[in-house]
Amino acid sequence: MSMPMLKRRWTFDDLEDLPDDGNRYEVIDGELFVTSAPSYKHQAAVAEFHAVLRDYLSGLQLGYPFFSPADVVFSPTRAIQPDIFVVPLINGRRPERFEDVNRLLLAVEVLSPSSARADRVAKRTVYRQEAVDEYWIVDMDSRTVERSTPGDRRVDVFDDRLTWRPTGAPDALSVDLRAYFSRVLDG
Image (tube, rainbow, N blue to C red; front, side, top):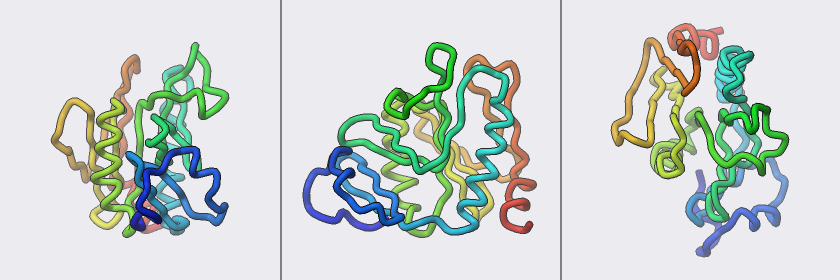
């Protein structure tokens, strides 16, 4: 994550004036964050987790998983592009526009060397304050997933198995993290 480009308060509307140059532009509490294009392994980790979530959620009528680039706008000064996110259904259906998304069931960020501080501090704060049910940070270096919730300041760290049971789900999703990291990093 780079430092803010200028000493000013950025808004989501300001992002329209920035170049379409392959970078990810996010605004967190008025501060501009710029991230370069993700690496191959980063994208492999995103794709694998998205597939796990898609398979789990299919047929449950609870939510729908998306991946970036896609803006999640909580307010004019909070526009974030989670690597993966699950939106609840709206009137029993998948949202038709990202502008219709006003809350998240889950946000997932895959750490990159340049994003660790923003993901672990700024984004964790935003996701807690915006009452995102769960926030996961996938750390490929340590082969762990960190889980945060809005009601608990602690961060749980998992290296073997991660479970997720969104409200209304009859059964929990159970992710074998060792197998996940092996598919992403060793395959």
